[in-house]
Length: 81
Image 1: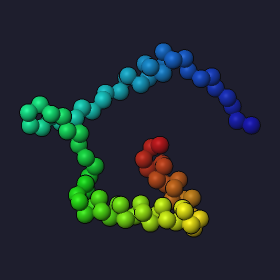
Image 2: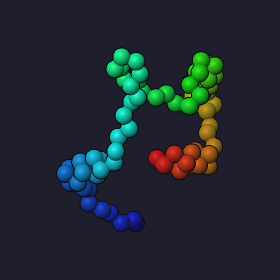
Image 3: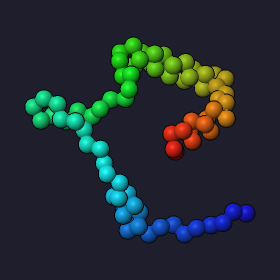
């Protein structure tokens, strides 16, 4: 079997989390912070995404959703998850 490792102590986790800088939202207008949206965040892009999500939900409900495992793995690696 594989090797095991100890779970880090809470202080180690806290230190690891806080060593990376956090992006702040851009201030727009009278001091209001507006978080930047994802690229392509137009109304037509939102509609297309909503249609895609609805189709996927229908496939899941019908039991016909079968993602390509290799494509899933590629996306996980690409996004660094």
